[in-house]
Length: 270
Image (cartoon, rainbow, N blue to C red; front, side, top):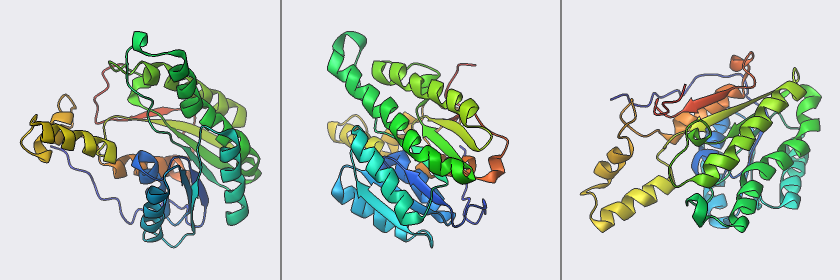
């Protein structure tokens, strides 16, 4: 079984850059912020939960020498997103890298999903990215920069009972591809498509399954999530974060307009 590789010490050349990560107080957004912080970036994250923001700030402070901002904001509110971006530019004196992340919309089938769910999912997944990039654009274009959208492998291969993720997230890929043409050559725009990673959400689901008696241990439950994955495990969030950091660096200087699955090979579509 392949194990995560420790990439500590790999210099991506983004030390001193300014980076902003939406919904970066937990999950894969936080993993991306941590990877950027380890590379020496000034990092700003936002989230709705004040306790999680404090925890995220403490973790980021310990990882690098860069400055850290942790701002309470709701990314489904345009004014919150604009204030987060502008405040970050003011605090860091500019902006080099943007990472858009968002929590997942509720699961459900098509007939179980009402209009409010569709509109809420669109604001959460698409408009949050639109507002963030629109507000960040003049600052990124000022000296070149990068945008990385964290989406899901569901944009390539639909997942049962996740109609909102399957349908709405694809708009972000269309946005990414369009922006890679409109913003080049000054700004590179890419996306990552994560599969299952051992985030706090999966930890909660596995622990609940253990409590129900579905599994004898956390390790057994986590292994079940890796069934059908060619690498025979779920991802470590750090692996996704390191991919985002690489896409934010000049090490990927000729990569733009691409969607990179980070799923252990689980997606079967070509």
